[in-house]
Amino acid sequence: MAALTIVSYNVHRAIGRDRHCRPERILAVLREIDGDVVALQEVEAGDSGAEMLCWLAAQTGFHFVAGTTLIRHDGHYGNGLLSRLPIVHSTLADLSWRGREPRGAIAADIAIGGEELRVVATHLGLRPAERRDQVTRLIKLFTDVPREKAVLLGDLNEWFLWGRPLRRLHRYFKHTPHVATFPSMAPFLALDRIWTHPRTLLTNLRAHSTPLARMASDHLPLVATLEV
Image 1 (tube, helix red, strand yellow):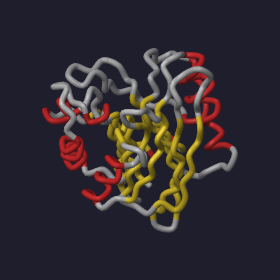
Image 2 (cartoon, rainbow, N blue to C red):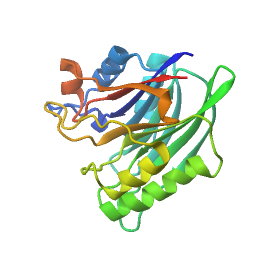
Image 3 (cartoon, rainbow, N blue to C red):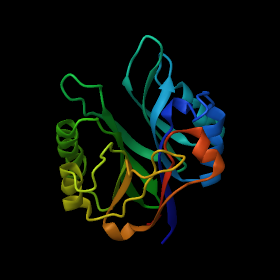
Image 4 (cartoon, helix red, strand yellow):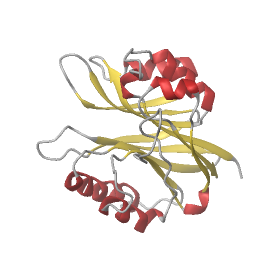
């Protein structure tokens, strides 16, 4: 078996607690962690939807997939996926809910030796009914074509540990510890989550809390170690 480090990180458009936009701090935090697969949320971008993500990929040498969800006159943002390992295939799933901010997920198959790991990275909505619908659609990304090994990660915006969306996810992924990541200075909410299938893949789960990480974004990165 080999250890694989998976990261979920809401970068808040690279705006830190000092209200300055500093993408170089996000890069420095990622280098502190040295993860193999990184799911990013709220990645700021221009017209192409991938500028910050392209820059991070160029700096790290990682493969990347852009999943821009919100297109605005003053800049776009959405999800992003970085991977040290080759990305065999990727697709974007629309999780938007009527009248609400557009949401989506990146579904990618990542090559690990002779196997593939299905990775789905997402950022869910703010309303409970919205999240319930989005979770139902997310689970289909794993069950329509069953995968032997899979990971779901991202900012789920679920404030309640007993919320219905989490109960639905636990039916498929089994129970996974919750780790507080928000707000970054004094976290008490587990908005960012990582699940694995099978559950035995996950060997460690922690928040990356360093002085730099506490300043770079309003979320701390969530870091998982997998044995694959």
